[in-house]
Structures are given as C-alpha cells and as structure tokens.
Length: 319
Image (cartoon, rainbow, N blue to C red; front, top):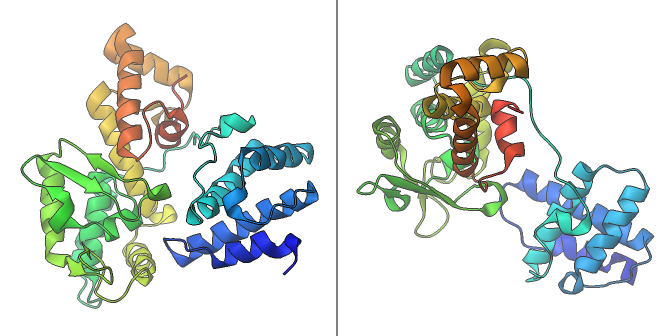
C-alpha cells in the first residue's frame, strides 16, 4: 500500500471503544485529518510518529482554507483518538498549543424538561404493560433526571461496584464523554433513592466482572430502545420542551438554583434581566455564587472547573 494510504488504512484497523456510530464518526473525521496532511505534503506513514508538528500543519492548512476553530478542534479530537489507539500519547491535549481557540457552545434557550412533565412521563412509563423493558427504561431516565447522567452513562452504570453507599458517592466510568471517569460526591437522599430503584435492573454485561442497567445481551442497541421509550411516553422537544438530554439540563438548572437562590440566565429574556434578578436576590454577592455554581456543575458534567463554555450550554451566559 502506498504512503498516501497508510494512515487511512491504520484508521480503519484502529481499536476504538464506544458505540459503533461514534466509532464511525471518529474514523471518518480522522481520515479527513489525513487528507489535510497529504495536501500539506506531509508523507508520514505511522500514527505512532504523528507529532505536534503535524497537528500544527493541519491547523494552519485548515485555517488557510477558511475553516473555523470549532471544526479544527473536532478533527483534532478524532486524530487524538487514533493516536492513542496506537499508543501515541505525545500530542498536546490543549488545542491552544496550535492556536485553536475554544468556541462557545452556549445556548441562549433553556432545554430543561419541567419537573411535572418529567413525572408524567415517568408514571406512564412505569405503568406501561405493553413493553417488557418499560420499568428498566423508567429507572434510567430517573437517574438521568436526579443524578444528571448522560443516556449512555445511565445505561452502563455499574451499581454493585461503583456506588459507595457508606460515603454517598458514585463513580461514573462507563459510557462517559471522552472516556473520562468522574466521581459524584455528597449524593442526596433523593439521588440515592433513584439509585436504589435502579438496582432491580442490574444485569451482567458482556464484559467480564462488569454489571450494568442494560438488558442482558442487548448491548448498545438498548440505547435506541431507551430513546424510543422516552419518545413514546411524551419526552420530546415538541411535547415536553426537551428530550432525554433535557433531563440533564434540568438537573443542572436545579443545582444552580439550589446554590445561588436565583434562576440561571437562560430562564430570562436577556442578560440584563438576569442581572437585575440576581442582584435583587443576592446583592453584590451574585457573581461569586454564579461562579461557584458553575464550577460545581462543570465538574458534575465531567469537565474541569472553569469550563464556562460547558456551563453556558446548560445555563446560558451570565456575563
């Protein structure tokens, strides 16, 4: 196979984890990384030899073609996945190294699912006798709402091993975004009650020694079944103002209110209206409370504190 095809051939053979659709997206985007490398006359043949120099050349070439930093960052994420698959961990984790700035993903509109809508969906799902896995689906969306888990995280939670009942903490390590585990501390009674309800549905998975909340032997197909069950019982953008992911939005909105005493910015018509409400509730202390709440939410979401692009996506920008 010629040099121009060697990296693409390796992309196809790389061992990746996660859903097949996610793996397909990574491979497709990584092949674009290779295309740009070749256009820049870089003849490197192995992913083990890819370096920061090659990432910089790709960044420069894409930017010269008018490509935005968001797309460049997406391509870099895929390329890092392939590099790691071949044991290459020398690539900088910071896109700033290559002059690629983090873009804002803030959404000015709230996507949180209202509590009464969620409870209605949950009740209908628990009472659905026509679908044998309705109870299991209900237990998982209960976790998404009360604990703030993503869809895949709720399905792959290993309750027997990762729920520390004595110390009221939960290790979330399977199905996480970017494969980054995190521990949730100080679980409330309400959150632990949701975990207790989910225990009924723990099944052995295909991975030795790992239990999860998916039907035995079904694998990632269960995630699509979970989506279907939610839509069937009214959890849609049209009917509920949000989808399954909106449960996570609502969890973080409630975390924000509990800490600050006022609603987040995306519950107001403008930033100025938010400032007035926050000032009326907390006085000059509101910026500190806002920052503290955001740090906590960013960590709970699986990121580092200070990732305002993340909290902006759930809460709207306060500045």
